[in-house]
Length: 610
Image (cartoon, rainbow, N blue to C red; front, side, top):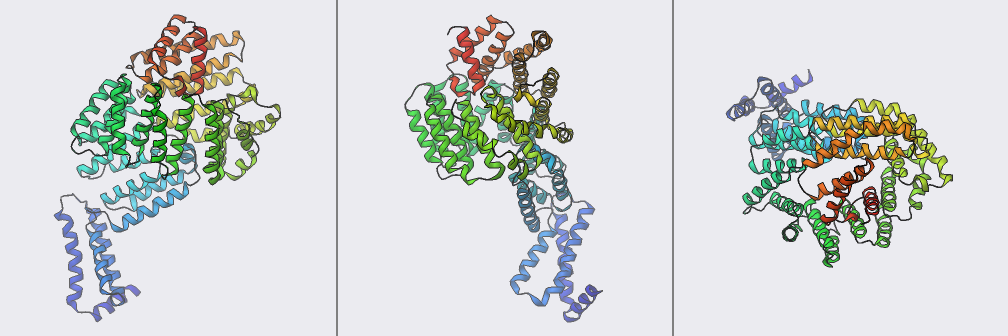
């Protein structure tokens, strides 16, 4: 009633002509919608008309209280809403910003992807609800998706869902290419290479399509095909030389190195560094690191100078950049066999970076340093103690699911040094093991909720679930059934990867199965172990077949080295020696790989007296 009286007062105070002009503007703004090329449904038309009339009515309430500038701004907003089917709404842009800030804050302490997916299922529903109900215009929905993309990791399946919904909208060609590109990348990150390729082929822009397909074929081990497409990108962008051109140039250098054309690869990296140093993005990190690696393999003294140039380039950049340089420095000095330097770098990193973090992030950082110390045969006791002495703080101050995954990773790390762990630490490790076992059902319930199209999530959870089923390995209480269950979970993951033609992940999973098999051999009698060994012969043969189909590259050589070790275990000594010789002739530095692979290398080197 109050609103009606307010409108009546407005009509009394102002001429009929002014009121007529207001209503005419409302009608004209709706006519604009139909003058555009887009098709507009009746429901959306009525929504827009309703919003416009509400704003006009609100205008009657504030007409006498605002200045001329406010009048102008107000009517700009009214017209913006009216033609919202062509331009993003001003209020939608603000709303997208507010919502993404909210999402980011909710995720502030989330460390593990599982926690993000299962611990906040309500947020997933909210995001979809926001998308469907709060954004009227197509461009507004696109703005929302772009905003959400910035605060949620690429491997989050909610982004896949949002982009699938967006594909159903009435999109321009440019908008459709954007959504298809995102869908392809998200499927690739989630391990669904079939869908990634399907969406990439639908992209209209040849350059964007080629870039994606080149990357997808590389992930499938089709290096020649990927190289050919990448060369076309460089040729087509030679004049424009945008960021995509430099990414393609970096990729081309990788291909040249894969085909042992190191001189060309080196020239390409040097050329790229000169051009992209100002960009300071991922391609710059890749160019520096790969060029340094080539110099190291050639025993070139320029490698150290280039490392210093790399550090200098990023000295004032983000924390993420500094962590990348820290991790690469460790790799660099490991390749140079300068382990004393590694210890110094770790101490500096802890002093200048970890001291500024807190909570679970701090302990994750300490766990990372612990892993580096173990890998490089350094004194790890201080890092072990910091975690071991704060078990209850980690459980008390974080969500159970955060603590669960942290301790599972921690115990997995302890597995590699279980024979060196002091006996007085076992009581605290027993507390961790009991905590993990008490959360088995929680974990299992979370696992059930993963959508099947999110292959990497599902497979990683299968692996983790296998760890939970025999978590007491740290105390050497492993039961045969626990070992069988873990391998069974890995085989479930392998089946998913094979179904979706994700061969590289399939190889990694096969090797994980075989690695567990070898590890269990030390626990069980030959009588118990022999049947398990026989059932895994098929997985070993599968690994051989998949690797044999890969094109020659450093990646293939890395797989062949690991296969050489398992060939020796399965008593195929001639094949094992042949694969080992191939790796030696490739001149790939073993120091670039992680500790287990280094151990395989030195084991085989001793067996074959190299």
